[in-house]
Image (cartoon, rainbow, N blue to C red):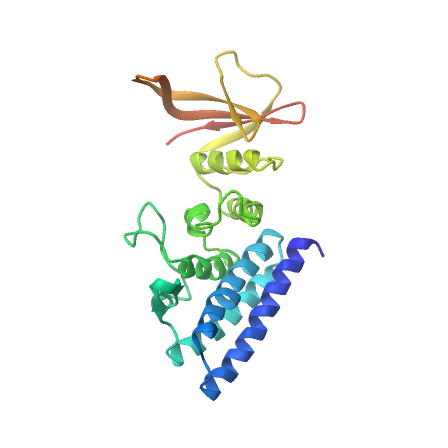
Length: 263
């Protein structure tokens, strides 16, 4: 069992132990503000991270167990009227009142009208939506809807990237989504691998075309070509913008080439 698998198991066990203690405190009327912060961190965040680590390593049993335990805890919280907010203290349990445990929250940044999601919404989505992915339901915009709040310096960032890559293996992304993931992997120092693309292709090539643009990502050089080029000028100089239609990433003795096709 590797480190990520152990982390998933420990987080799941901690959440299970916490829920057992929460039931006792509810029965004895001993729930405190500290208890509610434990609900938020040890239980909801803990299960969210357990699901993320487990999904990224293929431990689907832990993903399923995290989901089942989450539903048990959600029932206890709802019946006990513990889903409350204390914004000044950073306690955000009330959003879970509106959670559909079959679908999770819709917080896609392109379509959502809720503005900035509350952290508990994203953590709950890691439990619900990663489990749903195992049952054939795609996750829209996973880098945002599952990864909101995980920055590039976060120790979970490589775990998030691996989880998203697995999701894209199950549900192929669009070209732009694939490019974004690959560039993040390059920046994080992760060796890139091919993945299916809905509106694009991936090929292995030995040489670069002559009219190609270089860029430095995470200290590594990648290359791209643009369509719909447009130059923007300012007092500081000019920059050429456009839509990437081909990306070349160093791989082995050649390059992995992503090419946009169709729409």
